[in-house]
Amino acid sequence: MNIPVSVKLCATANLLSSVRAAEKAGASGISAIDTLRCILSIDTESGLPGLPTYGGYSGAPIRPIGLATVAAIVQTTKLPVAGIGGIENCENLIEYIMAGASCAGIGTQILLKGYGIIKKTLEDFSDFTSKKNISDLENIRGCALKKLKSFEEIKLELKQAELAENCTDHECQKCVMCCLQNAIRLDSGRIKIDPSLCDGCGLCLDICPDARIRLSWT
Image 1 (tube, rainbow, N blue to C red):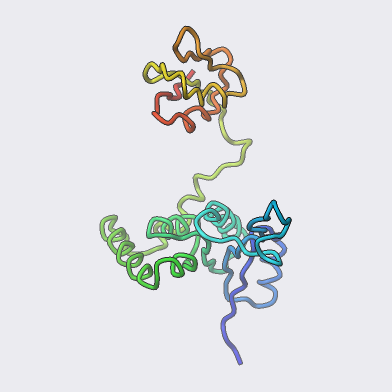
Image 2: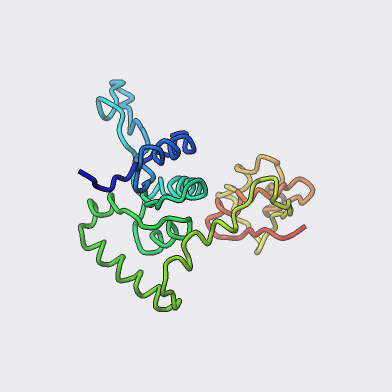
């Protein structure tokens, strides 16, 4: 019997050796990623794990890992790669294609929302390709890979945090507490940022509930 077989890889595998083994064995394609090994929870009163064995973590949180894994695999093989992991909508599907996937798989969202999510995703994808005048997926497949660089290739361009508007919220002070460089402080009833201490990490932007901080070029 001769049927196509796709090998499913997990993100923690040795990708290069696994891909080469799949090619040597005659695989027709590769899919990635599988669920991530996890212990979902531990009852702190009894010490019992939520499940009696390790589980498989899936859904939206694993999508960034799936994208990175697919991008890495695509650059090592000519076999078609199916992107799997955390696809919730059409945009996520497109992300995987732009990372180099030839097709994609949806699992968790079907369990949560039913099979209708497939039809909705395909309809939205059709609208996307029509608006962008995309007649062939190869026109966008892997397009993001060209923009990926190694850490050594990235030019270091420092930014510094600054207040987009004055903040006098004495109760919050989340930015003060999160700044490891002690560049942010409450002074005379106002939040102030010392540019000589700021390293431009951007954590304060993410943690500010009112978006009162921004990064600017030094």
